Each structure stands twice: as structure tokens, then as C-alpha cells.
Length: 306
Picture: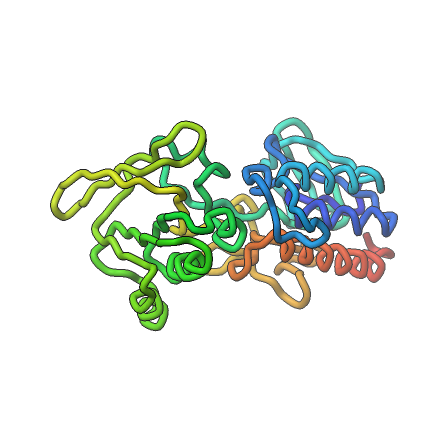
């Protein structure tokens, strides 16, 4: 029996564990077979406070893990399978075991929707990115592509113009779905070129991005473009479908009620699995802290019947 089980091992989950263990709560982290979240796929992180020269994403996560373990968090690199939130204590089933907890924090994050084209996966962190605020500074005075047609793609493009020499915004359809004001800002920016009806079929290069192979789905023409970076902005999907009985919004993000509570009493949420707005490591960590503090308060208030 654990006081709290945290499902997820990114910045939200590990920060939550640091706080719950320091509150002397018996804490288990269901970390997943691939633990650490999206930062395990990044290279240099320059915008996490406390690291003036930056820190490698995996190193940051290893440090967070060590800190949680130092205070007594138990970490299982097992994949979450299911949870029974219909009765207390809550039951959590993983790929290799089953656990019980008085409270639960959901911190499973959100995954980037990638293009799934040849050359993409192996170049994530080597010219392929899904976060301009995270990586734009690495492309100072370089030429980059942004893929997408919504507000996020527009925001990424505009942010990149502060660093890159040129930004090419590529969209597979003949019009953008972004808001009119965002489209106007993009069209008015001299650094941004628009390519509609265009799809990336391959990202070329050996160790880093060197170019892309393009296909115009209106003219059926193929072409190639030399490029230094590709920013994918076609959306994220929260890892929330696995939680039966937990309320989600129309985009699949877990709904938050009254300070990081879910619709089920004793189940809390932290990080990108509910945050559709910011999606930063530091905000995820902050949400983890808040969820842990709320969990501690809830356990104190319910100690007589938990």
C-alpha cells in the first residue's frame, strides 16, 4: 500500500515525487519502460532555471530521478496497463505487477504528433524539433522549415524569425486553419515564406538535417530543398485515454478541477497531460509540485478513512 502512486516519470512526475517523499509519503512512480518523458529525446536544454550554460535533456532527467530516489521514491520501469478508480484504495496494474494506493497523480504527459517520414525519428534533437522556444537559438542565422497549418505552427514560425535567417512554413492543404490574426502576422513577416499543398516525404542528412524531399499534392511535382532544421507543429496528443473514468476535454486533455484535482476524489493530475497551453519542462515541474502539495493536503484531510 502506497500513500501515493505517480504515473509518469517526466518533469511533472519526478518533481511531484520529490515533494511527496519529502512530506514523508510512501511514493511509487510507475515510470514506464521508456522513462523520462520528452526530455529524453532532446539535446541541450537552455531554458530550465539553474543551468546558465544549459544541460542535456537526459542528464536533467537523470538528476531529477536521483533527487526523487534520494528522498525515498520507489521507481518501477513498468508500463501502465490499467487503473480501478471506482473504489478505494485505488488499484494500479502494470505490465508486470499490481499496486494499491490511497491517492494517485496522473503525469503521463503528451506526445508530439510526428510526420513519420524517413529520416525524421533518428534526427530528433539533431535538426528535427517540435519546440521553437526550446531550440530556436540553435538555428541562429540558419534556414528552417515549420510544418503545420494551425496557430501553433504560426507561433513557431514567428518565434523562429527572431533567430533564423529564413523560415519556410509548409502545409499539406490549400489553406491554413489558424486564426486570421495569426495568419496575417505570418504573411506580413518578410522572413517567412509559405508553401501550401506541400508535404515532406523525407528528411535527408547523415548526423544532422541537411535537406528535405517535398511533394506538391496539387501538381504531383517532387522537389528537394536544402535546410538546417525542421520544426514539426502538427499537434500533440495527451496520454490520457488509458485512464477509464477520468474526465477529458474535447482534445483529450484531462480536465482539472479546483487545484489539480480530477473528477475522481483522490486522483490528481500534473503536466502536459492536462496542459494544452504551455508544454514546457519548467511548467510541468511546477504543476508536479502543485499536484503533490494538493495530494498531501487531501491525504491529511482524509487520513481517518483512507
